[in-house]
Structure formats: structure tokens, C-alpha cells
Image (cartoon, rainbow, N blue to C red):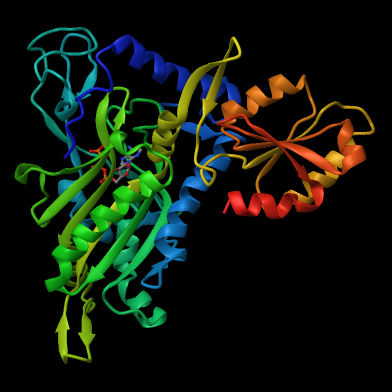
Length: 448
Ligand code: ATP
């Protein structure tokens, strides 16, 4: 565990300021918009704009690349979001997926008791000792499948992607030629009727998760748990978050679910302090045992080599894609002075940045646009490119800095003579002349 302070800095104005600046940048540059904004917004739901949708996709792709593409022991899945009550009965979500809810008798505000700084004081109106007794509030969204709203039609929006991996365990085992240790990975939307959504996209009622269930022989569970804690922490560092802004926090015994023999959170130093990005849990045989008991199906594995049958144990790294995107933005945000001018820059890893390259003709003149578009056509099949011919070149560079684009390619009048372009690197702002014929290879070396 790290010794870093509990909050990002003692200067709470500065941290609140950073948070506001990022929310503002997200709106101004098209990363994230409040949902249904023209109707006044809709209860802390958010839409990902033209720039944000690229970035969120990149976060998910980077996870998929590490967890599925680069491995031979993990396969993917995309399970349904709507699911029948039996799944949630078996998983324990009906009984346990609750948060303690209190109402303030003074102002009527509702709060999640376990997230209050002082469990006796209402943060909305400051009244002391006015809370009702806590009630356990189930976070699942209930709906009806089909035209009749009777009990038989009740369905739930999944509050996590994990159960799809357990209910498909045998399907995947029978079709993928994998045997324990092996994993099933999934990325997709989850829904929780959070009592107090907060901190922008950190906690929302609709969000995206990146989860993997890793099925192992029981006697290997502890070793794989430690392996996945290390792997997952390293993933964030590899993708550009400074190690000092991350820590692995093992849960105390009283935080563990009854079936878990170990859980650690990957935490990030948000402007309000350390908070969770991902949980890695050693879940034992709980999930497969529960679904086997409720469905009557055999959810175990017969190991021919040892002639034994066992229920695999599960190690689960469960991350939030939208929450992780926010952490990437916060870690990458910097303001600096360059030649007497202020610039804002997102130092995003090239695989996470919304665009890898911006193609910019120096002017809108007829002579420069066709060669600029030819360069764009050369790069577009391989990289996500932005194209911008508006405004002065300096302002366009600043805009790309704010989007986190690692490279800008400028086509100028000299390009017509020497068949070369200027490539500007975001962080150093250094410029290099590169022959158009070599451009694709030049980028392939740097943007792999
Ligand atoms: P919390 O204690 O913050 O409510 P949790 O421990 O219940 O979260 P998990 O069930 O472990 O969260 O979910 C795995 C990951 O999914 C979390 O680490 C987080 O990144 C993401 N996540 C969970 N709930 C939300 C939410 N309401 N909004 C955005 N991301 C979420």
C-alpha cells in the first residue's frame, strides 16, 4: 500500500478547480455531455460526444487487447442486458445488492449512509440527528419483458456483466476448447439505481464495465488472485497513469463478501481522494455453485488428466470503463506556459487518445487542401485521424493539445515542392520534417 496522502493535495480549492476544469473541457470539446440536456438533463446520465466516444472505445479496446487479444487463455462474450429474476435470485443480488438508504426528516434529501462523511449530519441542509432508520435499498432496475406487466414478465437490467459469464460457463467450455485456468471476458453496459450518483461520470446509474471471470483449479486460486492484482495494476501504468496516482488496497476482513477469501481494489487518486477504479476478487466456488443449485445444471469441470471432477474457483477483475476514462482524463490533464502563452494539454497514451493524428493544411487555399486530403487518405485506414482546416495553425495545435492528439501533420507550401510534411509531437512540441512517402511507416513505429 502506498503512503500517499488521503487527498490529492491539501489545497481543496485547487482540487475542486481541477475537477471543474475537466468537466468543462469535456463539455467544450465534445467528450461528455449531460444526457437530454435540452430538457434540463436526466438524473446524472451522460452522453459521450464525438471525441469522447472515440476515447471510451479506446479504453475498452485497450482492455480487450490486453485481456483477450494478447492471451490464449481468455475468450470473449457479449451477453444480454435483460435477464430473468432466477439469475439474480441465484447470484444473491436480490438479497444482498443493496445500499443503506436514509432520509433527512428536515429537508427530505435521501443519502447513502455508508458514503456520508458524518452519519449523523445531512450534507444537504446540515441538520444533525434528523435521519430516519436506514433501509436496505436494492439497486437493480426492474422492468417488464413483453406487453403484459404481470409478475411472470418481470425482468431486470443487469447491474454487472459478470453473471453472463457464469450462466454461459458450460456453453463456453463446450465450444472454446479451453480448460481451467481460463477466463471469459466481457465489456458492456450495466445499470444500478444508485441512491446518490456523483462526481460526474464516476458514479452514474448507467455505465460500462470491463469484467473477466477467470476459472481456476481450487488449489491455484490464491496464486492467480495475486497474479491478477499485479497484472491489473500494471495495465493502468502501461496506459499512462503515473504509478504514484495508483494503489492496490486489500479489503479489510469486515469489507469482504462472505464468499470472498480476498479482494483488492485498484484505487486512483481522484481530486477528492483515493477511490476505486477496479475490484479484483477471489470469489471461490460461490458463483458456479449457486447457479448449479438454482438451475439444476452441472457447472463443474472434469479433469481427464487427474480423473477428478471439481467446481472451479473464480478470480474476478471487474473494472469500470467510464470511470477509468475519467481517471485517464484526470491523470493526463496539464496546464503549462509556452512562450508566454498558457496551454492546456492532455498527455494521453496514444492508444487511449481520441485521435492519434490530426491532419492540418496550413491554409484553406485550394493548393494545400488536395495534398492534405491525400495525406489523410493515406493515414485514415490505419489511425483515427482528425482533419481541421479552420483558424490559424497555432489555435489548431492548441485545440489538438486539448484533445490529447499525440501528433499533428501540417501540409504547407513547401510540401508542394519537397513532398514532405511537418510532424509536431504533442508533449515536446518538437517538429520534424517527414517525407510523405515515409509517413505511414514513421507513424507505425511510434503508434503501435
Ligand atoms: P462502489 O463501492 O463504488 O459502489 P462497487 O464496489 O459496488 O462500487 P463493483 O461492483 O466492484 O463496484 O463494480 C466494478 C467496477 O464497476 C467498479 O470498480 C467501478 O469502476 C465500476 N462501477 C460500479 N458502479 C458504478 C457506477 N455506478 N458508475 C460508474 N462505474 C461504476
